Length: 132
Image 1 (tube, rainbow, N blue to C red):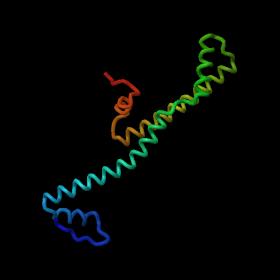
Image 2: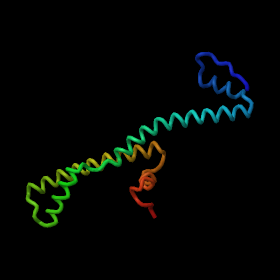
Image 3: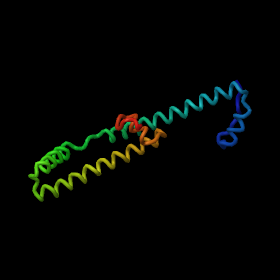
Image 4: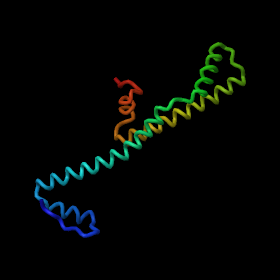
């Protein structure tokens, strides 16, 4: 195995120059080890980020909000919704839309981390069917 002499502080350019002097077989081994190192670093950070994003994406609308929305929309369909309840329904809809907006923002972030399109990510997660 060849050795490369490096000082305690070496620039990336100097390191690359030293790596250039490696025989092909050792260069391939070195590159493989560097790729493993990169993958390990990405896996550690992405796993934490992805896990948190997936938790946020899969978080349901709070049951109190969903229950109130269900009741108010049922009353609206039955034409028994009062003016005050209609105003409340609009507020509940706004809460749900805000919740959905945040979910989409988390999906976009996750798609960027995985370097895929939003459509592909949503398909992969089973959120939407595959487009025709």
